[in-house]
Length: 471
Ligand SMILES: Nc1ncnc2c1ncn2[C@@H]1O[C@H](COP(=O)(O)OP(=O)(O)OP(=O)(O)O)[C@@H](O)[C@H]1O
Image 1 (cartoon, helix red, strand yellow):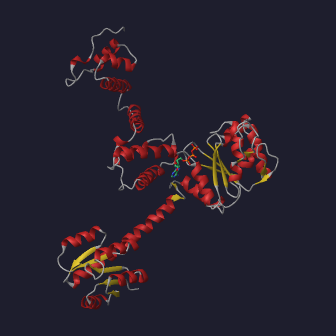
Image 2 (image 1 turned 90 degrees about the horizontal axis):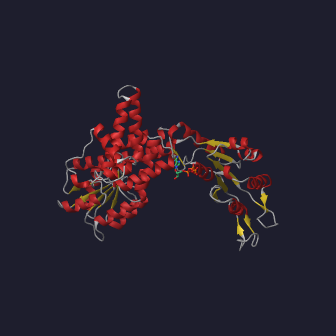
Image 3 (image 1 turned 90 degrees about the vertical axis):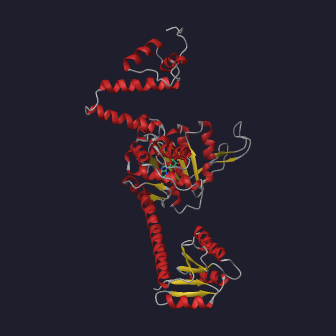
């Protein structure tokens, strides 16, 4: 199929000659003014536009802006009447693919057109591949290419559409709520409510009223009727986070709703029927709670029909860099900033850290780093010390265990580091540094002599007050 080129130029002579030159290779459409050009652009979806900068009625640059607003992916080559460099530069700033000054060499025009079409093709390919990557490495806001995450995606796809209760387990911050949402938004209930309730966040007295609602006057603070989360989630999904924290009484009530699919508000008599899909989550071991008798076994079996386990981030190392880049570009997009990148060293630190707070901790660290970096690439300095000290101590541990460094030397270096830090923080006032370290000034002096620490010449000697502290 021939590609279509739209020529927008008011001079018939130019249009005819361009048509003659281009027609063997391309299908050529012609417009004599801006309006006709815009109409043809919308109707015929050309692959490329040759646009004159001087047109009757509307300036070529204004037309260019309109074309860009319609579809940025179609390259526009400006035809400038004279050697109007300024106009050409303005056009390029507005997004023109290239420009050529009239009169031009036919071969030159051919090359410019071919190059612009080739770039357009490449851009399309990149967009397509990017979409593919998102599909392969993500699933409904969940990012991760590890086999553990791939398994989660396919389980979500398999069970999303059934009404069955799903139990999601995993450490705090591993993404349990995100998985619950993915289940809801991939089910037939996606247009119905998704209601989330954190069972650990409320005292026992409030949780039942939160879940089932109450009638006016049913207890002291019940000044009006209140609809509970079960009713709000009717025909949708109710996500019960930290379900292991429910009290025995609330567990019994929840079990009844799951069995009978109806309940009554606190203080009410009228049973209310509900159609709610329950997704529950916990970061505790429900097995263990059942063994200890704090979680009802019958409720456990009701809820645990299908279970999804989210492994901690330290066990899916391949996801760390991907998630870090995802959070970085998300933050940049939200703040409408130009894209940023990580320096090699910063990314190494991020990938080496064990992330005890899982994805939530990683997300917080990246968001803080964006603030510190102020638009430059993210460097180790923009990352919290915990990431660095962990790497430092694990490297040191390796050095000691492999005999590269003696334990004695490592301990001395460590002590020296801390003493120097305390001295720097107190501007070498030894009394203050000793207080920070929780040792006597005499002991500090002794350790400084042993470790070869002295006050640098740049720090004035008068900084230490005369020694009259009780030691
Ligand atoms: N795979 C992931 N892809 C993208 N973002 C994620 C992923 N996992 C978690 N997050 C993000 O990390 C944060 C914590 O996730 P979430 O609240 O779902 O964890 P959780 O396991 O429910 O935590 P908790 O047990 O403390 O309630 C959220 O901001 C979430 O968007």
